[in-house]
Image (cartoon, rainbow, N blue to C red):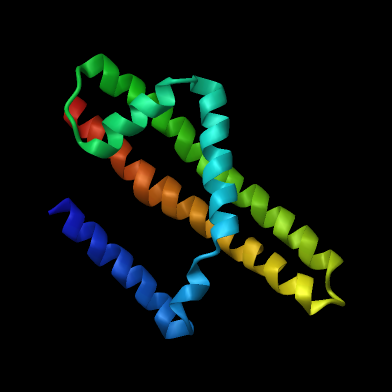
Length: 142
């Protein structure tokens, strides 16, 4: 049932882009790579190998002992914060790049896309994916 709900949620999300133009505009692989890669890297620095275990426990839905769940929630909170922070940081970088390219539309457009899409990806991954996994682990703990 979770998979169906996820598919419905993502479909409605993409429908918003259909209403505004073209769904392909919602995905920029370079920005997505930067946001995801940076958030994972910063979280790995903070928690080392526990990141991969926390992702496996949180996203797979496997039950684990209470101590592992509690530690996984702690790591996933760091990852969620990293996604949000990286999204905002890249938005600022996009704004700076935009301001430097005001006279050249070839550089203005991609910078504007980074400005808008980086925080969107931060929210999608941090709030919709990681927060959901955290909450599931917290509910199992109670």
